[in-house]
Image (tube, rainbow, N blue to C red):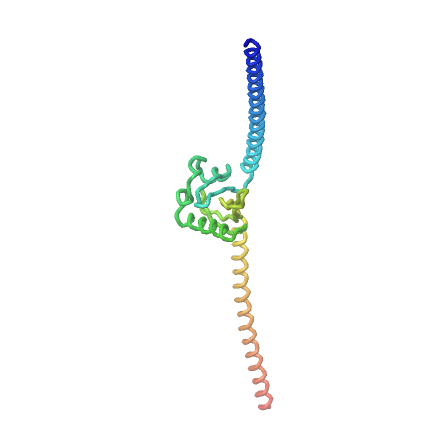
Length: 212
């Protein structure tokens, strides 16, 4: 009986030791897994921080919207131009942030990029403190790892100064064309008058010769 109890005790100790060892190994595995997740999370935060720093220091307006047109992300330039906070933008649509006519054009262009499933480049107009500004916008769909489209991204660059210069050049060209047309008309009329005077002079000389 004593031997049986001793054997059972040893067996119990072995089982207890095995369970303890398994728990230690499991705890070590969990510890390693948590550290790995922490490192990945830290790397992700650093990567997101670098990306956000890049976006916040560009002069372009950068933004991302979900398929329903709700903002998922905007950069600091966007916030500065339209005098809003991040909380006032995220989760909201253009119809809640801009006049209806402008918001509708933004939405149409977003849908166009989604339907064509490629990057498109268009001119857009946005209101600012000193009036309407013209932007050249590059819009394109964003896909997840499974190939499903879940958002549109836009990068808009202010070309108002260039647009004004182009309009000024076009206006100048139009004025020059009008001046050239007017001068050409004047020259044509002068030529007609000159030919008429020349014909009268010739006729007068002929009459004078017949009189002699």
